[in-house]
Length: 306
Image (cartoon, rainbow, N blue to C red; front, side):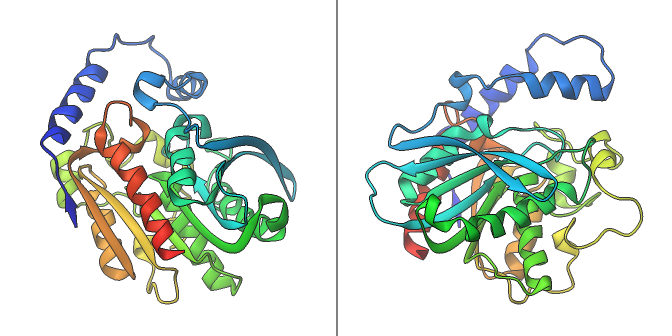
């Protein structure tokens, strides 16, 4: 399914132009630049704000040897127990923060009538693969064990954006292969599911907000050397049998567009592609109507499947 609108292309062009016209920052090495980016707060004029129909609450998730930050969004109008959705932000496995995506996480909670747990998982280069994946997988188990305090009804979904979508897909593979309970559903938004892929969308759109060019600094910080396990690059999994059904969102002007298309072909998945829209559009809902539409679509999808 392709969703198109006359405004998608114009809004994307305007945002890309805004980014291109920003003054250059100081000359820094990649790690110093990353630390600076991590401290930058989201601009509400681009990122929007949390949905007032939810009650956000910060909590700490205690896992073996570490404590993770999370923010829980509960729909105000819902008194009974609901499904719980674990959500993972994007950021190339090295950046991103739950505060960057509050419009999406709170909106999904309100529109989907679900509890959303938005997680700050560990990042490379301090914590390379499989740290973030372990966090996603073990937080699923934590959610099952803490269902009463989350007001969950036992049904669980996992979802995320870009790198977070890759972790969600990888966590489902880990659960299947370990024989532990799987989520009931997965939601993968413009997922990064391979490395150094040579696809049509890479050749057409690399550098349109995102670059996935081989040898990029971020990938060398995250991925292990040698042969990559399927849990790091889910598109290389030999089979996808037994995995939860999925909603997969793609962006038409994204170098990762074909990752989403190929995974959807192999999985029991509903694929929705936003034409003429750039990668990470859910991070900029205040200026990209595709982002606002996608939050409503994800919410409606969750109401349907649950």
